[in-house]
Image 1 (cartoon, rainbow, N blue to C red):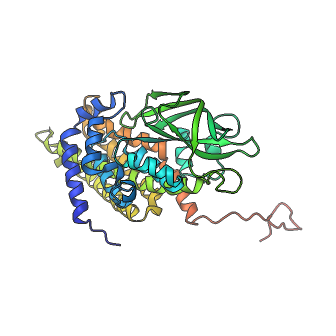
Image 2: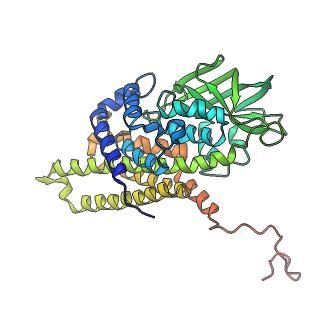
Length: 411
């Protein structure tokens, strides 16, 4: 493993930081999230044209930059520093990899170039509380219960001639209110044979009703999606499994979850590092009892502990960018570092940190909201440990009994 960044990566980081530094101050971010789209469309187009941001990890044959997921994670570390509200996560880290893994040649050729160019945005529509399970980050996604379970709840798909029709409702969809394309997880078949597949739904499809939801973190806009006899296209080739259905999306969702986790970990590290930097700057200038607050030993110790935690999270995030298989653990480390750093930032800013006028609360809300969507931390770590075989499987055989003392197990 070579941990050094290339000259191209350093240049991308420098250029992105320069652009975001000019266009993403706290006031600009707050103004962007209050628009109908929930982000600044002009800035999104500039990032798409100048840096190819949404197409960083898309193959060149489909109009992308053709870089590695590590480059996408590096870019997201910079977007995390300013809490950039944009369709980047939903489009580049969730939707595009699924289309690349499951889509037919025609679907990839039609959709990936538009996604890579920033002309089309996309969102993955699964029930928000189950997003982490659908991506196999906090549990096995094989049972499929995360998609709603049977006939009641979730989204149902029904064959309609050569196509499909979708019925149901999904809440807490990242960018679900504004994305031009939806990847909808829906049940097919009857209750006993229900199976979850992914379908493509255009944002202007008749019968599709969408609304923006109030969220804890405004920089992560979410929407409610209602599907009423909506025409949909199966993602992948019909009959790929030999039973009249499309390809099984569960392995692709799990692989996409690891990629998204590595990207989110880098983003959270960027946010935590910026929250720490602003806190260090504040306590260095704020005076109490005739001296800077940052000169007190207790404050120095707290800041030193935060620095160690952020650097440990950065190391984990960089390793996960190189090996996405470690994404869940890196995400747990990064989310914990962000939550602790943002909480300490509010405390060390004193009374001003609790006001709406100061941006310290934005970092704390990002930490809390990301744990709600992709965590919590203890479940991320628990599932990763189970996957690694750290916990032995329970013995299904009954425990032998002592015939003299039936109430005691034999030694």
